[in-house]
Length: 352
Image (cartoon, rainbow, N blue to C red; front, side):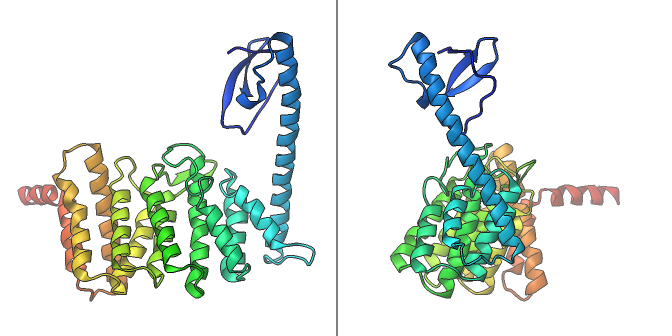
């Protein structure tokens, strides 16, 4: 539908649903569908859109003003070592920060919102059990952890990944003093694994908006899960299988040290004997199964990601505990995944 609008020069809207429009002199303008009242036609339609547009723009301006005000106040709180005045209520800020947790401004999202959450939830231990459970419920909902899940390449990834990172903070508090029942913990674990294995956008660092890092943030959540006393061997096996899906994702070679974050969790499982060596060996060897797949891009990604992860695990094991029985298994798996070993061996032997 083409709509002739005489009075609009520029217009920006955060709305997710757009109706295509056109200005008189040919420049395109996006008109949100909800601003178009279908009962009007002709001039009446234009007048209706104009009235609705003015109301909408005022609403956007109010939202933008609130956002800018929040940025300024969080900067002051940060400068004051995350302390608040007697007139300020941290809970009021939490509700606002949850609304902006995936903002594309990296300073606002990462330096201000996440760091404030970290200080208030983990360090200063603000908020009672009811408040923490509320924060967790919001972070886990369809507007946060599962916001546009399955999409790839757009800004929704920041809402998902920074919701995951904030969930880590609540789980840290749970480990200090139980907030969740066993059933609640199991439900949270199921949803976190569902999110992690459903995440398609595994970009690491993105120009302008900076870190998305879904694979790394998801690994940080898994690291908290395995440290919770409610986490049993079956759950740990589910977590390891989730890691295998991330490594064998079929689209992204992980190149911004996601392997280090995943490795931290696997090494913890090995070091603290959270799973039998036999089960860990089975999982490690499964990572090399991709060498038998059809030789294509999907197989290449799985092999390279697995190889890089295995190397990371090998050296972490050597740095921290070279006596672990699994060191030879790790070495042998890397040998299977490293196709250059055979090639280079033949080159060297032919040369000499």
